[in-house]
Image (cartoon, rainbow, N blue to C red; front, side, top):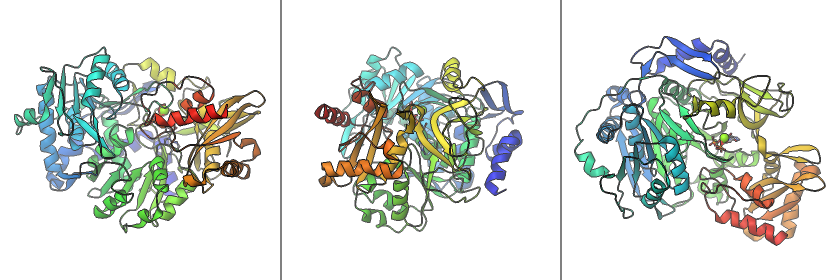
Length: 628
Ligand code: ATP
Ligand code: MG
């Protein structure tokens, strides 16, 4: 057996010994007495009896050994700001914010909702919250009032931390009016709102409720706030899923398991050592940002880069400039972002030599093989690593684990299950484990490993009924994604289970068809949905963004549709190809196929409060109307 297999096997077959070993990577105030309590399945408690604190492990414990090392390096291409905070400075700032939160009445177990742009103060607020044993719920900055109100009512925060505005593509996005409208809409009202003023947009304040960060901070410059030692299973945060498939779910995370897992993952998956630098381009509002901008790099003693801005400004080389200038070793981003770069001149990808950048991890959406090849060629020696996970899982479920073994990668595959995740592909019809290359639902045999979701916030019943009730024969966690596994054990994610379409009795994944379309060099991005058809049941239709819009023509549409014949077969060929300049996506960069499909079938596109740009749906609507 190779190193990967031995390691993985041990994580499943000698589970408690494996995690007891990993748990040594963090400090425990009181040692745990039991590694895993799975007496009430599917609920799992990790490191029972142990007490610890996330902020202590990410910041305090490093101050003595790496106090002068940069912990957080903030770069904004929106405001042209750049600031570095050493571990020692982080410690001071977090203490100040913790003191402010305490001053506003926050105590252990209270929720603090953080609705902030990508600025260091957001990170301080996260650490300050867990420092005092409170529970944060970060909501992606710029979410519309309705989305925010829903999360306020679900999390019921005592305090909301926010700012005057974010900035995107050089445009100020005022947050305060959105926040005020959300509080107005919400049934639950926060007692206090702590506001960081960036002086980007004027703010109307509500006296008695709204507190000015800068002024309040001044009265806490030297206040020391002790870390609250909490039970390992004490909730550290609530994070809502992206809502791609409907109403978002409040994922609850523990403290001890989360700290252990993220520390381990930095070494074993992301290939980093203490002192090295990670650049994750996600947003703190998403799980990838929580983990790999905020917690994991600091837990592991690394330097994290926090970037406010888009990949195209001031020019499409900005990310590679940041990597080159800051010795970034591991980068984490999304396929969506890479497809954005793919539409630009490839010269931007090569403008900066990147001798130190070893890995580019991509997650969040299927990484189609053509895009993977394109970025791999464009970046030369950088390993492109597809990794599959969910808000629920808390860290990658399927990924190469370069710190364990540098296993060969296959384009289009995120490689193998990550230690701790007992992944099984089950046939939806029979519940049986599928054969090689046969489609199945990606499931995980519980207990879910440390750091994975422990329940749905405030709704244990929903945790069981949503995630553990798909199969009658066995209580397994369902990811609601389809996958196959080839004879060598490589996994391929085919998309969501509700993204499968049935064409004249053939079950086709929309992802497979999209992947086929992507192999046509004219295609920059595409979305495929199934629409009802009187003859065939369903037919696939495609929306395509061209790399070069001047190529738009009927001949182009035909040529693009025919790409599918070659790759999959004529059965999967889209019945229609529509050319658009924009695809509807969530703010987290995921295609909103359910909304496209609803429009295509003349239904209501559903909750659109999390959409990135509503104009994209208008294009879809217009394309259909013209067609009809
Ligand atoms: P909701 O559950 O509210 O509908 P969501 O599933 O989009 O929202 P996330 O938890 O952010 O919210 O996304 C996880 C999903 O993203 C996965 O279930 C999968 O469909 C997709 N995904 C993530 N990484 C990959 C990947 N590497 N390849 C293919 N799909 C991926
Ligand atoms: Mg999901």
